[in-house]
Image (cartoon, rainbow, N blue to C red; front, side, top):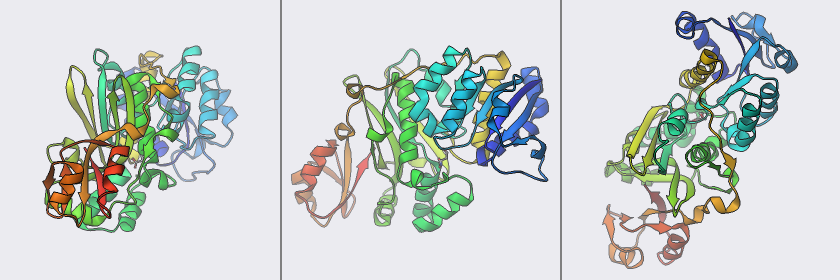
Length: 394
Ligand code: HSE
């Protein structure tokens, strides 16, 4: 019998506990032993539920119980999630997490502590909900330099943008629905302002390059400013607006940007709707690959947490052992150098737009440039055109 503990019985923690209970027999057959959730740490009690007898309010009970081999941290937030995770690793317990804030902020230290104590720190659920992306990025691109990652990495904002595009819903109504479905963070500003996407693209960049960018230094623009007039006009021409976390290698260094991007129908990301996430990864030799699946919500996220738990319990120690370091200043390019094509909606006519931005595709009142611009180049050019609505193009 393997004994584990779960920290936090919220959406993901409860989903994980339910999954381990529901698939008890299958799990026992696959890993050769039963898995017992011995403790659940939460501030609340859960009377009348199957978990009520396992709830504890004192973390030290878990930390000091030698029977506990592994702890699933599904609390969210930086503290005390980080502190409890460190304590567990130092006590010789592996830790599995869905907490992208902790991984994006303290990942280097937590991985090093796991290594020093002969245990594992795994975080498949921190990016892409149920999509297997973390392990494949480390294990299956080992022969390739990863030259670009572009991802719809936040289910809440993708749900909102899809509802605005397909059903004409207001931003506020769509956000309330996403919250009711358990997709959103406790504070949904982390979703809509792109902070959650930023943490996730930083984690993917760390795995791809070995250097974890400082999320606070990555240019991050959320979806509050997306104008439904642009969403509608673009939809008519089979373009979709998606909040993307992007990393492109330029001269051997990663450059990151989080922003709403216009995706053309030729891009698989344009067809990723609702709570689904989609991530394209371009390997230098392999070319483009795509990962797709449910990016938020109890069941998909719990599936990724449970997979990490079982991978570790099966062999005693996980073979998945990534390492990365916090990037030094000169290891990551400033987001201002991110380069992409642009969409503009303006009263200026095509000739006036082309005089400033070069050749464009005419969408009738709006244009897409053929040429790519860095942030600074575009700001300088756009100033000559006056009032406009602008978006970046994938
Ligand atoms: N709030 C996140 C999202 C949860 O909407 O994608 C999954 O990380």
